[in-house]
Image (cartoon, rainbow, N blue to C red):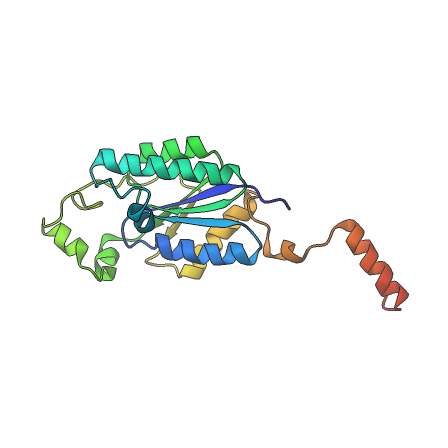
Length: 202
């Protein structure tokens, strides 16, 4: 099947598993022969948006720039995996509208789980009032109201979560099923059958 461009938008609080899942999905899509580009919050902020801070206006501008890049790639038949906290519903809605082929994946984990995982201790500092504008603590995180996929990284394995995302992408026609990878056209099947018959196998 010809590849259809799509942006898979991973949203969720820091430490909820967005990047880890996107990396696994990238591996799986490449195995299936698809063109993939991964846009990650930390990487993008070192280049495309390094001039921006963490105010609401700057966060919105960050997502606006990422949306522009994702739109161009999607329009050119690429599977774009965008991993951004993207805490505001309105900004994600604008991204969906601009990009068109858009699958929202909400990566959830309880605050207790996030604090437990946080090796840098950022959540503890934020909870103690030492960090301003920290999403989910001193700044809001607006959960998606109707994402295409919701995963709970506190209770699911990464492979279980990956399976849910792949199933949705297959259902929407953006990704061939793994069985399709080796599928033959009708003409190819007929030719193979003819060869097998000539060899006495059929």
